[in-house]
Image 1 (cartoon, rainbow, N blue to C red):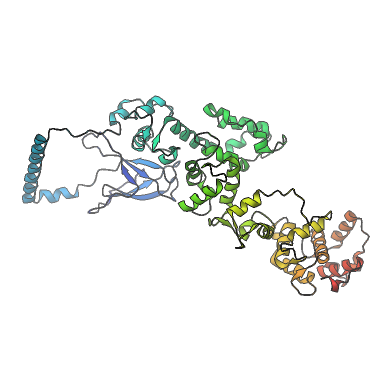
Image 2: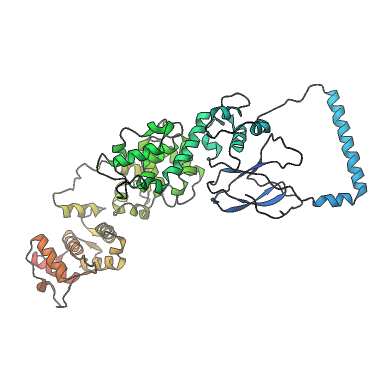
Amino acid sequence: AITQGRPEVPESSPDSDIVTKIPGQDLAPGEQPAYMVKIPEGVIGGERFPVTISGQKLTITCPEMAQPGMSVRVVPPPPPRNGATCLNQNKPLRAFLFFAMLLAVCAAAVGLALWQKPAPVTTTVPPRDVCKNTEKPLDPKNKEFFSKFDTDSSGGLSFTEYSAFIDCLYEDGSSLPPKEWCDSNGDEEITFNEYEACVDMTDIILWSEDRENYNSFDLDKSGGLTPDEFQKYYQNIFKGAFAYRLPDNYLDIYFGGDKNAELTHNKFVYHPYTTLDLVDMDRDGVLSKQEFLLAFRWAFRSLIKHPMSDEMFDQYFVEGDENADGKISFDEWETLLTFIVKDEDGDGKFSRDELGGMFCNPGKYLALFDNDGDGYLSYKEYLAMDRHDWSKTDEEQTNDIFRDEYNSFDYDHDGFISRDELFDNMKCWATSVAETPAAMMDLYMAVGDRNGDARIGFAEWSFLKLFYMIDNNPKDGSLSKEEFDYFLTTMDISWDFDSFDDDKDGMISLEEWMINAAEVQGIDYNDYS
C-alpha cells in the first residue's frame, strides 16, 4: 500500500537498500516495473515506513500479516515529468541529444555487424506471460505451478526464480518467512518440499498462536485441555500431510504421563517439543544450524528480550550441540531454549538476578556450579547444573527437614547463614515477592543476629522460620493471638500467649518470640551464636 499524493523527486536519489527490482518483467508501454521491498526490522503489520524507488520517496504500509525480513511487491506511480518542460525550452540541447543518440545507434549497428557471435541469452526468471496466462491455483502448494518457474530444470528454484514465483502467486506480498529460511539445507535452491514445509510452518505458527482456537477445544471450560481434548486439537492443526506428527508418547511429553492433567495454551505454545517441531523443516527430529537460526531470527524472535548478534547465536549453537554432531537434538534444545530465553540481557551467561528469576536460592547454584568464580553461570556451567543428579543423597543431608533446609542455604558450608543467604532463604519461604520486603528482611537479620557478627546459627534460624510460618494473616512482622493459637493447635504445643506477650499489647513481636521461644526450649537468647 502506497500513500496518496505526489511523491518528492530529488535530483538523484538511489534506491533504498531494501529495494530490489524484479528482473525479467515483460512490461506494456507506459507500465511501471514492480519491485520487491524488504520490511525493515522493528516494523509490524499496519505500520508505515519510508522507501526510495526510482528516485521517488514513497511511504509503504506494511501488510497486516507481514513481518520484518519478509518482502512485499510494490509498483511505484509514474515519476513526475518535471524535466520535460526544461527540454522543450532548450532546442539546441534537444538537437545535440538527438545527434548523440543517432551516433550511438550507428556505432552499435557497426559493432554488431563486425561481431557475428550472438550475445548469450540468460533467462533465470520466467517471462511475465507465464504469470499472466497461467491460471493460478487455489492451493499455493501446487507442484505443477511451482515447477513452471524452474527455468533451468534443476529440480528446485534459485532465489531469483523463487522470488518471481512468490511475486506471481502472492500479488500483495507473502506472509512466508524470508527465502533464506525456506532453503533448509543452505544450497541456495528451494525444492518443492522445502517450499511446502515453509508454507506449512507459517500456517501452523499462526494457528498455534491462536488462543481462541485452542480454547474452543476446551469443552469443559477448565482453562486447559485434557489429553483427549489436546489430541483432537493437535490433529486439527497438524492436519493433512502432518497428521502423523502427533508423537505416540505425547502423553508423556506434554502431560508427564498424567491422564488427568491439563495443558494451557501458553504451556503448549512455549513447550520445547512444540517449538522444535515447528521449525524442524526437514522433519528429521533435530535442528540444523539453519533451522536453529530460523527459530530465533523469525519464528520465536519475540521470546528474546534483547537483540543478539550472529556471533552470539553461533556461540549458542556450538555450546548447545553437546555431542558436536552439527545438530541440536530435543534434549539439547530443551536446555538451550530455557537458557536463551532466560538470558535477559543476551550476554551468554546467567547473573545472580537472572537465576533469582528462576530459583529462590540462586546463591546455592552459584556456589555449586560457578567453577571459574566470576559470579555468573556460563552455558556450560548451567548445563552441568541442569544435568546434575539431584536425587543423590547429599553428604550433609539428615532426617531433620529444618536442618536439611538450613544446610541447603549455607552456601559456603561454614555452619552459619549469612545475610545474603538468609535473604535468599526468605524468598523461598514467601509465596510472593511482596511478602518479603527489604524492611522485613532487615528486621529478621537484626533480631536474629544477637552478637552482631552478620551471621545466624541453626537455633536462631529455626525460630525465625517458625515465626515466619506462623505470621501469616496478615504477614506483618508480629503474631496475633489467633495466629499463635492456630500454631499451637497444629503443632500440639501447650505454650501460653500471655507469657510471650511481654509488653501486653495483644501482639507478639519478633523479639518477644525469639526470647520466649528460646526460654521454653532451655536456650539463653543472648548465647544464640
